[in-house]
Image (cartoon, rainbow, N blue to C red; front, top):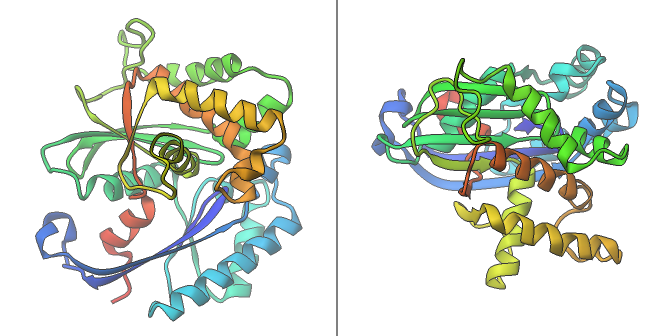
Length: 316
């Protein structure tokens, strides 16, 4: 169970898990995949005040209990709980973690940002060809992790404290999309390879692979894939490995501005929390693809939950 800054997401896999799954893909047998999600949005509190409110903490506790009940119905009574940036950075993170663990009688593992990048990369790349170069962008609620490598071996990562909740706060305060892009540029300056920071406005990072397969994950990317599929294919729902071109982001942004402008955003096939975050998410995703010169990317739901299970988090 991934306790993210926006959504708490449960993944239960049933099957045969080899002892060294990283090298034994063919020995892995997945018989069933079950998922459930609860929107909590406690990263919004942290982006606004630096701490998480009692109301959001109580909501988090209820969401975890609901998801544990779902997991138990699916034969996994003790799911692994991993937390990301909200429980890394919040001023009252230690107090919240201790309170939740005491109430739930379960331990929560707070991932470092690098661990989050590593698990996300492994989960996203595991089912790709082993000789393929991959770059993964995971734009979350309060942080963004960019990781790259070949096969399941991550070669490097760039870690930013910038996510959709923080972008939303900037936009609410009157900042423009250009200001968000400039802020992202400043974050990237500290990660760029010496002498390679810019080539025609495109950022290159240390060990950056040539012509990698571009993968995108995170709540905003999922929402984008759902909307893109509906606009372009008249189909609903999320499609794994959905391909989106950079120029289509501008088209979708225009369509969404029209809906939000006339108060019809509730017609979107998304939960209310995600609807509120989508404009900020699109601004962040657009800034990222432009800074990296990405022409086309694939949206994937294979993320740190998959990485956590495949590297040993499975209940056996």
